[in-house]
Image (tube, rainbow, N blue to C red; front, side):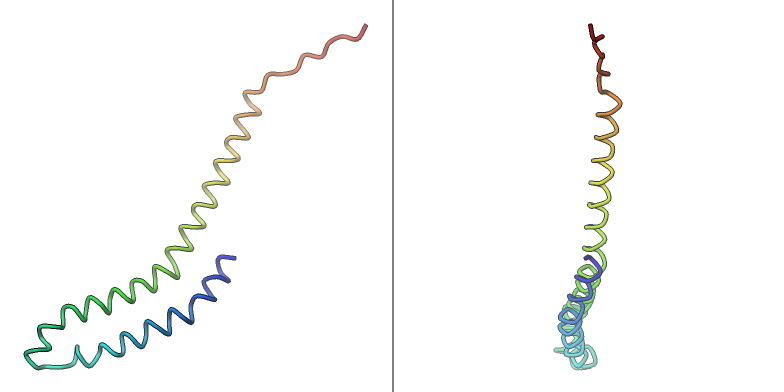
Length: 95
């Protein structure tokens, strides 16, 4: 389910990331004084968009998997503790 959701999210994320970064290239390539003022903001915007792409496609699904595995481990531990601490039943002799 996680892989299929990442595959279905890839095209919209990719199609918004690439045009944004391609649109920022002319500002980064410009040599005028006024564009020198904008370059740090444009560079941080481009890296932020790429970082958000990787976070959305890799980090978020990985965190879901970690949470799922942790929940399974916790439930198995609870079940194991409840069976270890269970009071054995005493079978009454039938008369």
